[in-house]
Length: 191
Image (cartoon, rainbow, N blue to C red; front, side, top):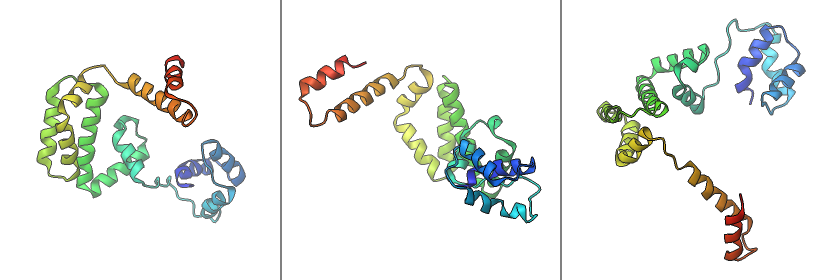
């Protein structure tokens, strides 16, 4: 639980705030759901004088590393950039995956209308030889027209999906209480 707040606690300790109760309140405002004893245990090495000179590295999880890969490189902090760089040095496969994921994310974000960019990405992934990326590319290839339409047009099915969700919610609320006519009226008359 404390892993997400280790960097914050380190920086606050280096700023001179050594009160565990105050630090607990601060990180609780940031979303921490643990108690003060966990914070005290985390701060014990600091109190005994073994304060690391540089900030501790964030706890690595698949979700965190995926977030670093999918975020724009300029939006990463120096620590995140350093950690991702070290991981990529250790694993050439991760370096390749990061490159392909960022290229695909850039196409989606910028809605590039050039269909060749997608085709080049698919060809590069097919030739690369990693196991997971060709599976993703095969799925994109199966729905090539839909993916290309998503990249080139501004149309979206978001409004339709929102209405489907609303109808399902109304149906669940009325389960076993009314007949189809009442459900139909409620769907048509609700905002």
